[in-house]
Length: 110
Length: 112
Image 1 (cartoon, each protein chain N blue to C red):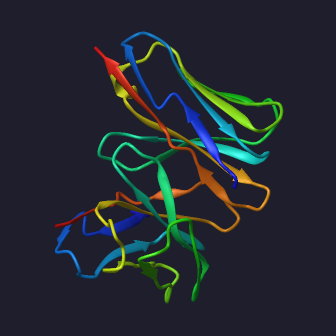
Image 2: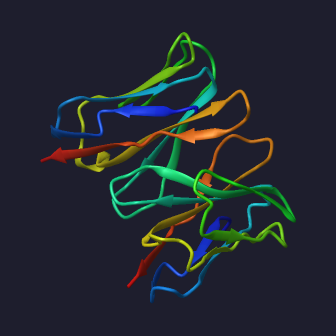
Image 3: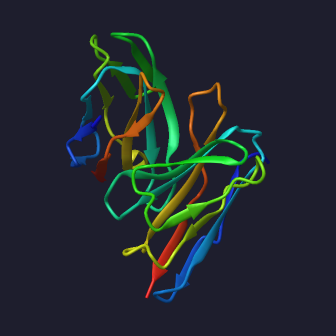
């Protein structure tokens, strides 16, 4: 079946270091969304990417959608303790189904 | 304020009892969803509804039931047939024409 995978599952970084999580789909996606879930909280929408090769930035966060629309990456520059949480990608398939990745849990050591 | 309200936030139940989790939204969203999240894991879709009086099974529907009698409400019943019901349950919604999924704050269910 259709799957969305994320790597790594966990990442521990020193505050100030960069962080990247990768999202890979087994099928071509219509769009991809990223969500952040703080510890004990609920997922909150961050951004949506639609076009092949699209790159969007939100302050220290950079989001990329692959040329083949099967993979995506979220990069955080100079992490801060407020970045702690789990980052989920969610891909929308051609059948209009949304599939969430398993998430990457980020810990930031002050 | 507009949003999705889930209740209760914390619930303890004895094994063998059915329990119903409430989800109400005032966003006028068409589609509503229920996800299950286990510690350190991703979101798994239980049921979803795109219109009143209609709903479809997600990936892990066994042991759960839902209803959608009103656009604003999508309650989830965790039945005694669900073998491992202890988890964090998230309700979500979105506009039919939209892409962004909005989540409620979640309900923690512990079965002892």
